[in-house]
Picture (cartoon, one colour):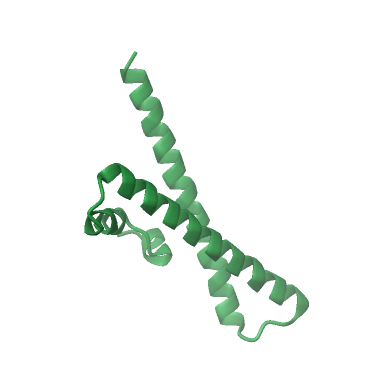
Length: 99
């Protein structure tokens, strides 16, 4: 597992495992897992923004925790963008093969 997946807590195996554990079809499970992952990224972004705001105003209590929150937000956003890029590339590839 790459460092990017370790930090964000998201992996393909985890997503598929969650979907299969719920007994859902793969289409519904993937959609639910994707929505949950997007919500987690959103929460990390909010946490990172709050940490940056606290740093700017001098209200930060623990500099290390603030830096970690900002890094988690950045890495989770990068992971989400990579997943989006891979999905778009797969869609384009499928579109080309169906012509």
